[in-house]
Amino acid sequence: MSTPITKLVLDFDGTCTRVEQAAAAYLDEYRAGLADHLAVTEEAWAAALDRVRSRSPKIGWMVAGTPSAPAAADPYILAYEAAHHLLRRTGTHGDIPVSVHAKAYAACPAPWREDARSIFETVIGRGIEIWFVSNSGTAYIESRLQEVFQPGDPLRASVKVQSDAGKFKVCELPWEDDPLLDAAARDLFGRIPPAFPSAELGRPIYLRRGSYFHALSRVFGGNFDALRATLFCGDIWELDLAMPRLLGARVHLLDRAPPFDTCDYERRALAAEGEWAKGGVELTSLLEWL
Ligand SMILES: [Mg+2]
Image (cartoon, rainbow, N blue to C red; front, side, top):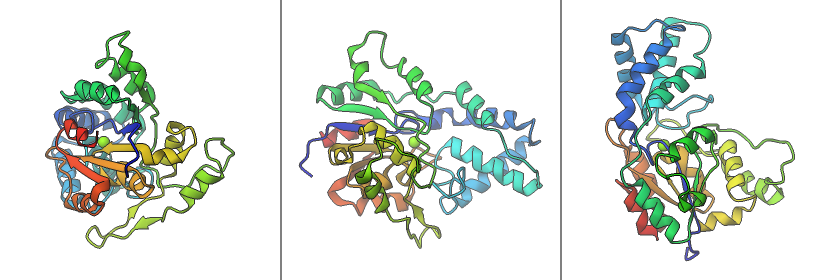
C-alpha cells in the first residue's frame, strides 16, 4: 500500500468531462440519426429512455452481449439501450450502425471538467504519468486534449492515450502471441473470477474484461507489477474500477451527476475496499491520494 503512485489511469467521459451537460443534445442527435434504421417519434424516444432509466442498474449495457455497466450510467449507454429496446419492441431486424453514435458523439462534445487542467498539472508535478484508457478512440481523445494543452505545452508529453479499450467487452484475452501478454500476465488474468454475484442487482458484476486488460498491458509495457503503483479513476464501478481493484490497484470513483447518478451498489462496493478505494464529487478529490 505504501508503494508510491507513479501512474494515474483515467477514464475519459464522465470522469474528465461533464456528460450531463451534453446529454440532451446528444440524445436528440442520436434519435435523428436513427431515422434511416428505425422511425422513432420524440414521444416514443422519451418513453424508451424513461423505461431504460427505470430498469437501470438491474439491466446493464449489453453492447458486447454481456451486461457491462448500469444501462443509464451515461447518455451514450442510455441511447444504445433505448434504441435496442425499441428495435426489439418493434420487431425490427438488423442492428443500428455504430455511426449513429459516432455522429452524435462528434456533434455534441461533452465539456471538460473545469478543474481538469489544474489537476493534470498537479498530478504531473508530483512525477506521475497520466494515461487515458477509455472506450473512446485514441485520435478523438488526443484531439480533445488540444483544448487543455496549448501547442508546445511541456506537460502534454506526460499525458498518454491508450484508448479504444473496449472495457465493455467481457471476454478472454486474444490467443495470439503478444509480447505484452507473457505467461505472468496471462496467469494474472487467468486468476480473475468470471463475476461477482450480486443479489441486489439480480445479475452478476462481470470481471474478466480481456479487452481492458489488453489495453492495460500496453500502458504497463507488459509488466503488471506496475498495478501496485497505479491509481485508477473512473465514474462507473463495473466498467472502470472493479477489475483493476481486484488486480491490486488503488481506485477512485467520481460521482456521476444527475440524471446519471452513481448507484448505491457502486458506493457499497467502493466502501468494501477500505483504504484501497476512495471517491469524490470533483476531480480535485483525487489529490487525497497524493
Ligand atoms: Mg466514464
